[in-house]
Length: 83
Image 1 (tube, rainbow, N blue to C red):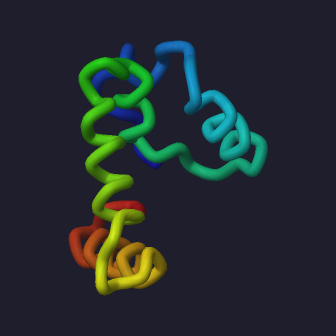
Image 2 (image 1 turned 60 degrees about the vertical axis):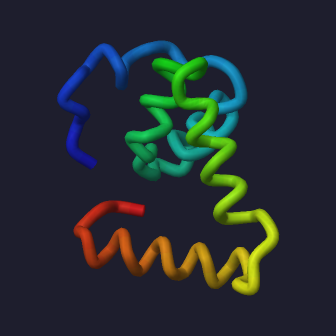
């Protein structure tokens, strides 16, 4: 994955609940979703995005969480956005 435009966002030491997720991806040699760097950089500002996303993807719905993930992955692919 290409480095982020703002290197200080990407290079900030990881804290909080993202540590385990990011370390596991690093151990696998997998790319780290760039939005995770933003969540780490400004957790007090991005917390509402995490809550919103969980509500949309995991909250009550006529669609299963798996179907919602599939729709999100398809949309991301159509937009040339790594998911």
